[in-house]
Image 1 (tube, rainbow, N blue to C red):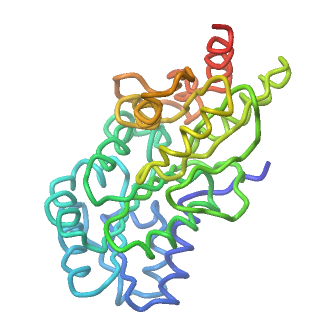
Image 2: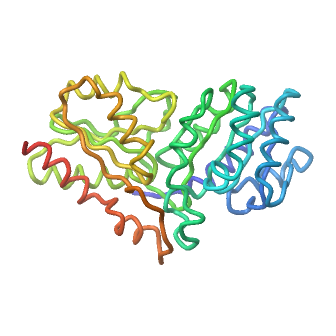
Length: 308
């Protein structure tokens, strides 16, 4: 399948929004050429604010712009967006329900060369725990672009999780915030994933098909508000559920799904990062393999559940 880059999709969507809506402003923390907010800078320099390596100041400035009627998009690496500026996001943006949109770029293990200090494996947990926050985890470039537009339409704070590497095109140009989307139907087991792990889930479905197992692949591209009702409905149609994410098992997709299934008899398991940090590697796939975030691991978990 063709692959495209979510960062480029983010930058292009932001650029297009800038042309359509003069209220859109962009702020950056010295990473514009990586997050691709530089596309907006080139077109609208008077609406672009380079804050330097000062994420807390960036969020505080964005809050002021939002309070004055602007729709402020802030971009930086996910680990800094969710961690270094957490206090400002919580205390000012979220409590104030301000129109600040945060792009957490190079999320998960996708920033493979910079190691644990730059790999956000807990950002979804941090952002979904904040009241008033909406959290999008798009599956591919098309969905990332649609998530930017959806974020602009939300009245209040939004966090968008974007990976660094190219990802296959799986979505069909549709994005409904707050709802699961079926990428491949199946009747035996449902594989629920988001972001970079959609590819692994699709490949796992192929592996299971060769063993006579029908595996649905479901995209959880909104982590908040989480589609708990959709999870329960899905559980009633299959014999087992496996979640997959390039994020800690704590506070991510596995945890949200388990909570939704607390009264269900459908068994579930997960493929996720255990309670540990990332590390440096030659490429992102090496890290996914090392932490067991693979199609084979997903298929094995599905077969184990079905064998019970």
